[in-house]
Length: 601
Image (cartoon, rainbow, N blue to C red; front, side, top):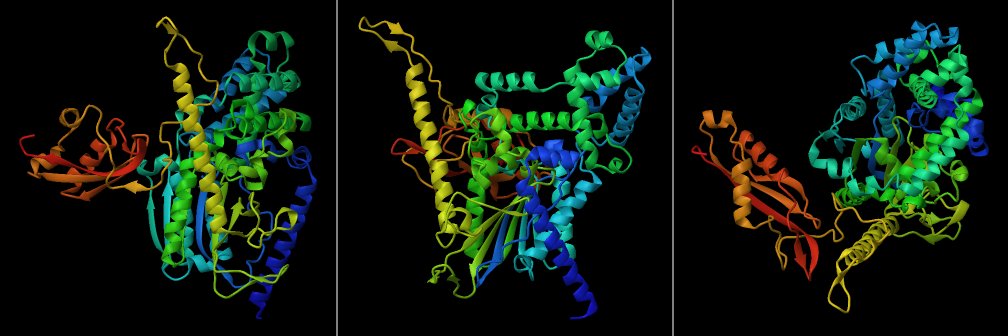
């Protein structure tokens, strides 16, 4: 071993020992003790990504990684709402003009002005630190799992259409290519993938903060959040505070500003954390931790269904894994989005027990610690392993078959699943490796069971809502079901098979004549195509989902990019179709539609 390699080996060993020690300390500390030691952890979803805290468990003998499926949050960013900076500046500036600001208040105002100047024209955008976070994640990915990224392996990357997510993706891909220029990269950021990349379930969204949840949250907030001390430190008059300051609103804004500082270059020159006591930071962190749990976690007060907003994403992960593993060649699927997907997905996957509801709001922090789940740059990685030689389960000496194994990393640290490991062990003795067949079966059944339950619940609600007739033949009112209604917008299909023919084929609402009228009214012949005399018939292929929405749009017979783009736009904007049916049940059906462009249009 030469000096260079020896130095690198020693460095890796020291880093490994440090991460193990850090992990052991974290396991023995409560979140409040961690925040007392490190104020930046109180930032909740604004925590700047810190990388893995553990050393990975070696794969079972004879196995090597062949595929990675990933969903990651964008890296560190600036605040999004201009009022996040503007509101405290207006309040503090007015107090300064009124002669009511203390020296601390004046210094706070100057610091926030500096922060706003740095973020000017960059609201919501990726910071340089955010870009570096994704380069580092990609660097560790290729270093930890080099077999996946060897030779000319294919990497398929998708992003939401938000710029900070696209830039996060591109920084990661550039880093991968820097280490292996032979990689075959495909990448996209379009509305085509938003049904799973950034699903917006309007029905479940409305039920996040239902009356029971809202009452519980507001009661906890009123009992625990105390802004008075800080307000007295910023302003010179209690009367002025009472008559002119919305203390709680300013308190929250200052807390968010304190948390976001760590994500940009200004972190090197100022901090707002000295404004708060440790007790205040712990209370503010706990309040927001509870809010995230209530609105995205297994909160029983609103039915506990919010994690299922990511059902389309989980199905996509499963289906893409099946497809890529069938190739028997190393590859990776990388997805870049938002914490509002990472958090419910982690709960839906039941990583580290995140599917378990808290018995009370005061106990949420015992099992639900948001900064460990979705900091800036948060990511979930499913790493798949295939056998190269026959391994043994050491505890039983049973030979393992040709099963594909998988382990899940949450923020690059190994996470537990609610299943026995690949050797059938449960509890603390299990390894982080699981049989993919077991994992796949468990999650597909979980999704199917939920959708069947919601379908039955919806049918019961419809029956309850239908006008009933009494013995005299007159209508009587019936009560609405109190159950959570299933989502119908972008809902994942109950039957994942796509049919080319069904007993009752899908149809445009109103039938063929209505569709022709709709096409005539909404079709826009591209002017550039008209001037060049480009005509023809574009055929668009798509899937009519079981809920009538259209997905997987593609041009199966192109004519010209100008006409192809308009044909896809036209079909994408169609109203929801009447789905196909088999045995009376809605199913997914594959359809094609010709869109004609003539010069006399």
